[in-house]
Length: 280
Image (cartoon, rainbow, N blue to C red; front, side, top):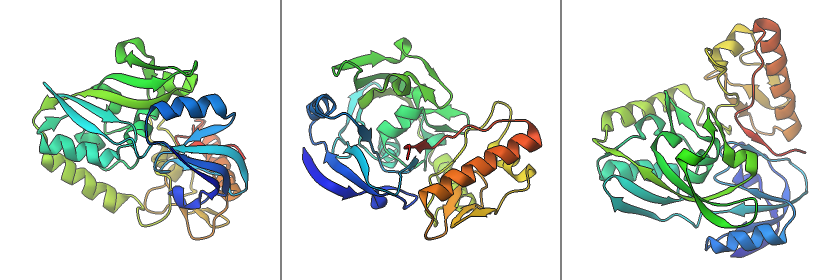
């Protein structure tokens, strides 16, 4: 493993907000994760920083990166072994090359495979756990073990992984045949045209309440385009928050509070964050 002391985390956040970490640890072998969790009190697993809000101050936290764990291997019969640090786009590309079907609706979602597994990421009615057979984790007892999907509790944007603070090392996926290239290209075009990808952001900020879309609730509350400091509710997609240049962690927290209050007042619905917020 590689350890960098007092590391600046701003560049590891897609929102371009973040202070200095106690240390930044790059894992090179999965067994090293066990050593890290046994010897540190405060650790945070940072993927590609696409959905994580990091405080803009000095932090007594050891940030851990698994990006070097990026092996992908075809096991045959539609089964694919994937390590957690692999960028999700690479997995979608792999399914295309091998004519495997399943992840098309998720194409274009930023982040690592492990990050999407952690939160059961999804889009357009599909979730990543729809195609997982088992995962390999470091569990709450600091042991590496495998868990079948059938033995796990998984719901919309929530998993047992979060509740028990497991660390995902790898997964085995099971795909069908018949990659839909046109679907992937269509969804990528939609994301590029309907999401503010040119601005620093953390993707969808709020989960969609059952039977509703957060974006529509925000529009109905009349707050699309509102700002707090240099943080703005996007005019392109209101479930995205954009850093206009010099936004602070506190700006993000305040605008999240604003959105939740206004939507609750207008519709009676309480929004829940989809992004991960590291407490200040």
